[in-house]
Amino acid sequence: MKPETLRRPHKEYRDIMKSKAFGCIVLSAALLLTPALVQAESDITIEEIVEEVDLDAVSYGDAVWSFPVALEDMRPDFVVLANKHYKLDPDFVCEPLRTIKSMKLNKDGTRKSGDMYLATSGQKLNEICADALAALSDAARAEGHKLFMKSGYRSWQTQNTMYYNRLKRNNGKDDGWVSQPGSSDHQTGLGCDVVPRAWKDRSMNGKMGKEPECIWMAEHCHEYGFIIRYPADKEEVTEINYEPWHLRYVGVPAATYIMENGLCLEEFTYQLQEAIQAFLDAGGDPALVQEYIQTPSEE
Ligand SMILES: [Zn+2]
Image (cartoon, rainbow, N blue to C red; front, side):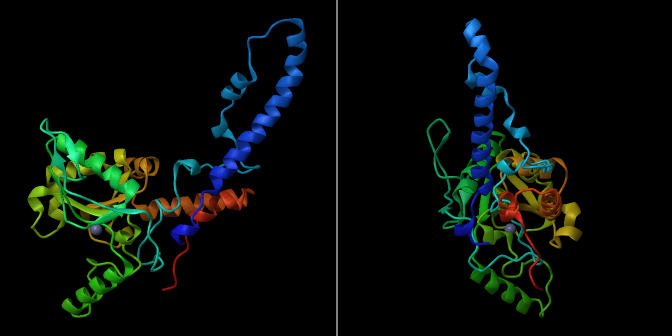
């Protein structure tokens, strides 16, 4: 799945459905209202009738999208799963990327420029994700939490080098701390490592999760569209050690569903794939869901 091929067919389809629904309503409204209009002046306009139709309840043929997150509320590239079973193409990334900057303050303490309280220079993220992270950082700072963004986007090549360097240092054994090339969440441009300012130079480990900044992030990140990508209680599912610092942008509706139900992205993806299958089995339009389909990569 390459970013330039990602489309939102469901959006176009929804517009078509809207215009179709409108056409039907205009016709039936005209039939219904004609005698009334002749006999008396009616206050009801066709626009008002259209307003009252709940377009979210539109089903696609006989198939109903029953997944808790609406297709219109997700983007296929924002919910993409990257792990060692679902590897990304070497050139996959959610573009456009932009550089994350340490912030400068106005005299009144508000953010004048930049994104994070502090950021490693030159780190990049998808621009929508970057804006969401800046908003998260502002909200955290308002609660007295200073966040340091340690790393963001990482190319397939960089990950490849990191992985083999780690193997070399670890006598050829994969200890789960560095992802294989193509399986790193950082390659999406939506994954980032955010640590308490005080941990800037400390080594990363699960103990960080007890810091107030990390507790705050776990509680509030979904409000900005982020999830804790590698939760402590999901190590067996993610096959990655607990990383309280690794945030992953998926958009607010998906993040809220994931965090409020205590899921990890793998579980979300499995549920989504089941929903897609059920939708297709019921005769749903493949064009609406095809960009969300993920299949395991060849081992
Ligand atoms: Zn990370």
